[in-house]
Image 1 (tube, helix red, strand yellow):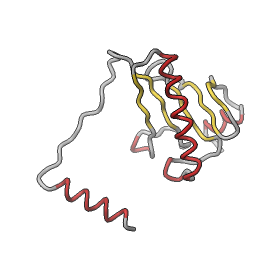
Image 2 (image 1 turned 60 degrees about the vertical axis):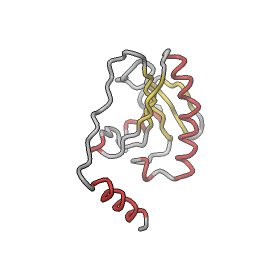
Image 3 (image 1 turned 90 degrees about the vertical axis):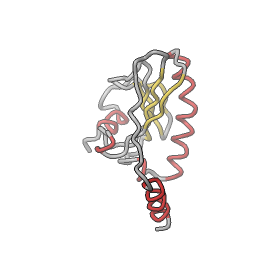
Length: 136
């Protein structure tokens, strides 16, 4: 398997680990948005959050909740962004589910993406489409 994160898990590639147990690994991102930016992964390979087993996802999120305050403390952050990209269109660069814990600092010059506006009855239309998709 050519997955870079699987190679990190196996020890074939180096990483700067901040946490490790039998099922999970957390390490510093090589290209951090802000210093202290951590990636949290399950050691088992799952391409995206959507095909990660629910029980594993719950434990992964619980670990993220434990790690986030430590990331904030270590980086002096006032908050953090929690990000998971699913699929290339969404910006997923490594096909192994991972959460980004991105420390945020006042005046770090990072800006949120701009919001878009719904036209006329589009909100109602999209809500109905989502509800219908949930029924399947």
